[in-house]
Length: 338
Image (tube, rainbow, N blue to C red; front, side, top):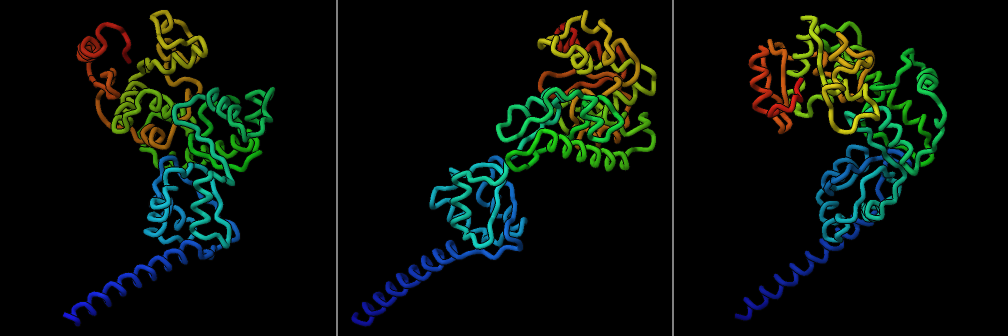
């Protein structure tokens, strides 16, 4: 019995000792300065990122953080609930605890601006104006002057600024961010154009950009992008009018109030594809990579009509009779069809 008591006592002491060593080791790890590959390492915390996702992003950026330890440290301290999305810097000599505390305080070294897929240039400019950390330098600068400053031979800016999240330091100018978005757009477009199918009815990368902008506005359902692009490609080959509502809306500008009437479809503008054949003269929105790829790799089929089902997907048809039946079924005689 005595030996048993001694055994229990020794076991408890060992458990306590192990716990103390573990706690000490955890404290030492959390407060030990990290060795970084540079004096400062930039990284981005995406909206909604979990501690585990952040730890992986840190390691990818070159910040040596032990993932399980960072996760438990964030959760046990409840600082995981305070972490704010944005651009940060890890400074050589930071400990994991200090870095976590910086994220929870929102002590950002950088800011970010997201340009959304489907935005037109007017919306992009407004987002730049609304950001408190962006210096405004383009007030009074015309679109043509801006494009000339960017070195573009295209005078109309629509669709030329790639939708993405751009990280910048406070005080960066609106021109700085637009220049980056323009250069990224040119890079992505060149890359996508090299992947084009050989028989697409598009002659230039700019035409692909126009087609992609229509696809971007016509459907947000990823699996249907290539099919929608195939419809418009078929129409171009057949010499049919594209008859796509988003181009009419774009041509209406600020006169559009959320509804298209029959007279709007009949009112001619350079972008009205009900009154003018072929592609419109410019893109109508910023197209993302998926829409660009769909534009140059359209699905091969015989569909030349489609109509929205009202749930984000579309019903496709080969003949006008089938299309009219689809319109009757899904639009209930409202006349909103493509």
